[in-house]
Image (cartoon, rainbow, N blue to C red; front, side, top):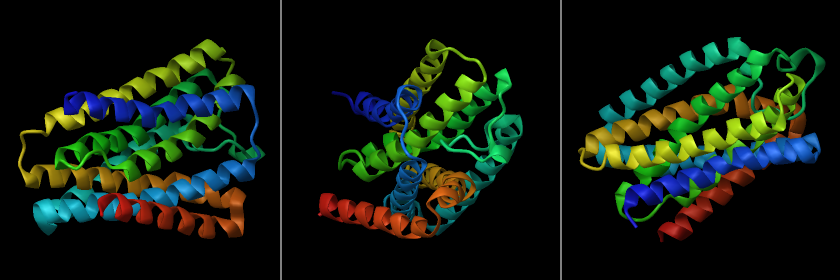
Length: 253
């Protein structure tokens, strides 16, 4: 099977967590502390992935200049785009439980804003999955797990927010199914578009994704996990980091 198709399938798998989260949010109910725990654990996994699978690899391939420029560029672009979608109603897109003063808007446009926020979060992650296959050692399982765990709470929160906005179940699952497909396409493009580029370019692109992911963690996942998990958030995050670090060392050994 061509690498680009493999990349697309891995991206689709990670994006399918949005649909799974929407299913749980629509037909079931998980305790808020469980969701916060998943978010904290996923944050630790993502921190490990961007530290060892992304930044370290980018540095080895392209050196400190390309890596640093890409890392800062990713954070700047993500932050600017996040400010826009947050003002449109997607600030709390990764939450499944809300205080009264932090609820997502019930206006029809808020559902679209949440969807745009999911695209903003997911595209850099999916591109990383595609680019990771170019190294010749197979997909980064840590990156796939990390993206999956970061997408799950987003699907959960979206289902509640979109239902309150009056959208049908068909609309909700159509939106998240489409974004899951886009995640697969982004991974495919990430693999095919950079297959013939040099190490410095791949390093830059990888670092851009790492910077965007770290900015996303600081802006959304970490504070929103802490709001519900409170004093346990740090411990659960450390557990996620350790699990991902161990997996990367064992798989890479």
